[in-house]
Amino acid sequence: MKKTKKKKLKSFVLPKYYESKIISEVKNIRTVNEKRTDYSPTKLTIGKLNFYIPKYFGFCFGVKNAIEICYKTLEENPDKNIYLISEVIHNPDVNDDLKEKGIIFLQKSSGETIVPWKNIDKNDIVIIPAFGTTKENMEIINKKGIKTKSYDTTCPFVTKVWNRGNYLAEKNYTIIIHGKPEHEETKATFSNFSSEIPRIIIKNIQEAKLLSKYILDERKKDFKKIFKGRISENFNQKKDFKKIGVVNQTTMLAEETQEISNFFEKIMEKKYGIDNLKNHIANTRDTLCYATNENQTSIKQLIDLDIDLAFITGGYNSSNTSQLVKICENYFKTYFISSEKKLISEKEIIHFDMADKIEKKHLNYLPNKKKINFLISGGASCPDSVLERLLEKICKYYNQPIDKKKIIQDFLKKY
Ligand code: SF4
Image 1 (tube, rainbow, N blue to C red):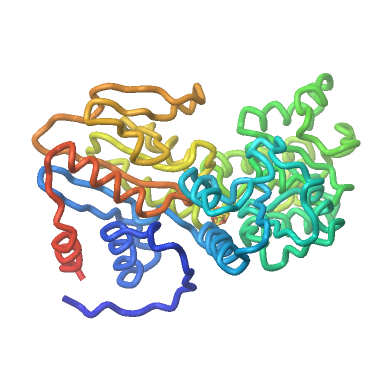
Image 2: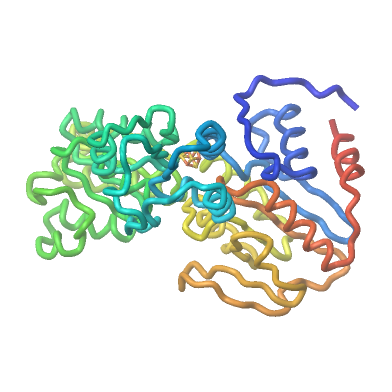
């Protein structure tokens, strides 16, 4: 066995119960022994069960940073009221744990008020979630004299998008944001560009196509009606499409983001000609974050395998998790679950149906074969411990004992 090399990585202090004996250990072994660009999946064999796990999954930099700040704030301020603007990340287990430990949420993910701002004063602590928050919320906080410097968990990859947008705005580009309009990050991004910048949110390629009709003057009516709540004040559809730049929510599907950028390039070429193109569309590469790219790239390494069943764990409102589910659904029978608790028994599972946006019950979901290949993974806000409990539960249903030490010893043999 080769000696494990040490690499310098920023480390975070997180509650131990988010780590796990197999999943976290395998992840650490791969991190220190392999190139970052090695996207091959991990395979763990337990009796007749094979578990395929993508190279990259689970807590990303921004999530670890946000969680560390929340728990540290709790520890250091036992006598203060600690508020979070809304969910710190989109994982129900993590949010529930923070609530149990005393953090109070001010708003729901939808923006609906839980605790009114009038109840908060300058002696309170207000934590900004990893998605960032709107300028309007920041104005209220600043007016109250609340200091947020040590409690702002806004992910640097989100701030990078804001900086990119503001740079484009200085050069008079209209910003098209590809994102989920109801998602906290997209709302924060929309709001954090300076207020004079014309900006619009589109959800997908279908909306990009619809928008292109207005850009090309092929359609004139209903613009404000169709994009209601998703355009900046005083948006002028006649004047504001002369120069455009596209940025995205950091957790969209990479292919769709690429398709949208390429599509708008063609549209502006059609309108202004190839020679003038660079004066009318900003050369923006996508603003997806590293974790979105790595998680999507690694799960795609599994699509040619003979997977019998895939489980993706994460919050149902988690954008990056839902993109992993979308990829898997194209190739395998896939269940989107918030945690292992959704495996009610070996006969029954409750899973989230993304099309209908509701949880559904499914019976007899576990395959019965000599050898079974599972894919298990989680979004950027899913703790390793959830994935490990999922693996344990599946093994229990198939009466396969788990020897954690041996699994790790066997895994280390390849290095
Ligand atoms: S998914 Fe990306 S943008 Fe979101 S918190 Fe993680 S690193 Fe930051």
